[in-house]
Image (tube, rainbow, N blue to C red):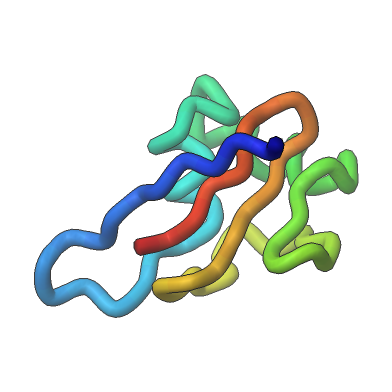
Length: 74
């Protein structure tokens, strides 16, 4: 069974940027490294490869990072 972690948006928020989420879940140690991780092709949003750190994630989106549990936006 695949492990899925849920990250809830704050009240009043409709979305979170992919770069912010990657820092929040410790997929990258610093914001400066977000771009490097995205360029490796190991990040997927809803099953599709994603390289844009500014990609807006909304409730129900699932982010997969190689070597980590999937993250669902709640």
